Image 1: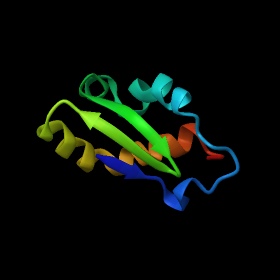
Image 2: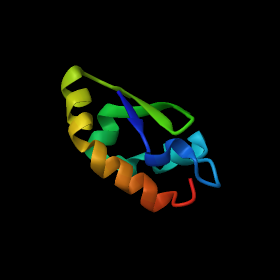
Image 3: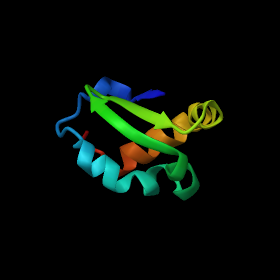
Length: 77
């Protein structure tokens, strides 16, 4: 699954993948983080690997909330 942030990462400070990984549980929620893991971040595009297609679908439904959380935590990205 991929999530694109508004502006495609056109902010002034790029989000480091390490920062995202360290905060993933807070961004996605504890249960979701057990089943979905960020695997790539490039040009504002976040790729997340899920344990199953059911979790991938769940993440698609959560996309707006995840993007909102990312923007709150990384406002300059």
